[in-house]
Image 1 (cartoon, chains in turn orange, purple):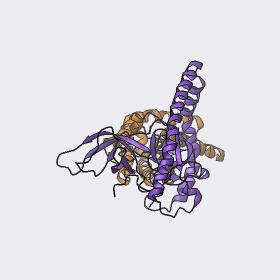
Image 2 (tube, rainbow over the protein chains, first blue to last red):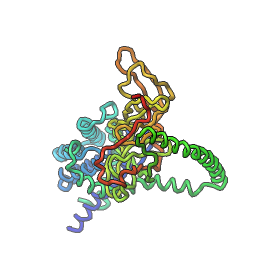
Image 3 (tube, rainbow over the protein chains, first blue to last red):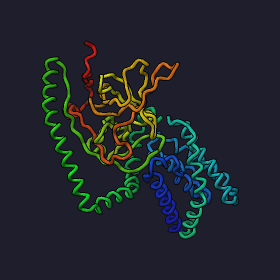
Image 4 (spheres, each protein chain N blue to C red):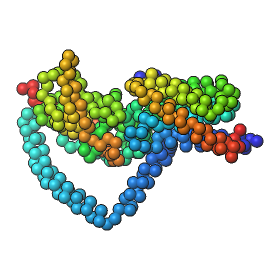
Length: 158
Length: 267
C-alpha cells in the first residue's frame, strides 16, 4: 500500500514534468500565443480525480515553478493555480459527473481566469489573445482527459 | 514583492537550477534536428558553403585592414581632443536554449551563467546586431531580455547624422518604436540606427535596426517611427555577450562609466 502511494506520487510528478516540457518546447512564433496550458490542465485533472492527493499547496508549488520557468514575477501563477485548484477541489464531485464537453467549458473558464489574473498582475498588455490559450485548451481537454485517465488506470494511481 | 525588490533572488536562483534540466530536455528536439541537418549535408553543399564563407572572409579581412588604420587614427584624434574612448570589447559566445517562454514577454535563456562570469546588464549581440541584455543570472544559465520586450528600451543614434533617441520594444513580432521625437526631425526610412552608448550599458556603435517607416500623425506632438531590429531575434542560435574591459580592471564596478558621445554637437 505504501509502495503504491509512493509510485502514485512519482507518476503524478512525471506527468507534471512532461506537461512543463510541453509548455516550453519550441514552436513557430505565430503559434506561440495559441499554446494550450498543459500544466494547468494536468493539474486540474489530478485535482478532479484525486482531490485527497493534489491540494492547494501542491498547486501553489507547481505554479511557483511555472513562474520561474516562464520568467514572470514569482507568485502570480502560484496564486492563480492555487485559486483554480481550490475551485476544482470544492466542486470535484459535480465536475466528475459532467459530460466531457461541459467539463471542457469549465476548463475554459478556469484557464481564462488564470490568464486574466496573469494579465492583471503583470506588465503584459491585455488584448484578445487572453482568449487564445483558453479556447485551445478547451478543444484539447478531451484528449488530455483520456490520456491522463488511461495513465491513472494503468498505473493504478489512487 | 518580487518585481519591486530583490529579496527573492536566492529563491529564484535555486528554482532556476532545479528547472534547468527540464529546460535542457525541452530544447533537445530542435538541437537534435539541427545536429541531423549538419550530419546529412552532402559534399556539394559543404563545398559551396565553404566557397561562400571564404569569399566573405576575404572581403571582411580587407575591410578590417582599413578599419585598423581608421581605429588608430580615431584614437590619435581623440587623444588630441583629450577625450577617452574604448575601442575593443571582448566577447563570450553563448548558445541559446531553444525553448519558448511566456509569449507576453520577450526573453530567452542561454547556457552560460554565473560560472562563466555573466553579469546583469551585460549586452548581448548576434552576428548582425544588438539582441538585448542579460536580465537575470543563475549558476548554469541566464535570462536575456530582448530588444522587443515591452519593458526594454535602448539608447540609439541615427548613423547618418548622429541624432539620438530611445528605441522601445513593443512585444512579439512588432517593430521597435522611437519615442518622443518631434515632427521636424531629420529621419528617413532606411536609416541605420546604432547604439549611442549613452547610459553606459551598451557599447557604442553596434547596429540596432533600420527605420521601417516614419509617420507624422496630425494633431499629435510626436512622430511615429517604427524600427526593424537588425539582429535575427527569432532565428539566431548563438549570441555574443560583450565583456567590457573595465570589469577586469576594477571588479567592483562602482566607478561611473565614462562614455563619450561620438557626435560633437555641443561645439
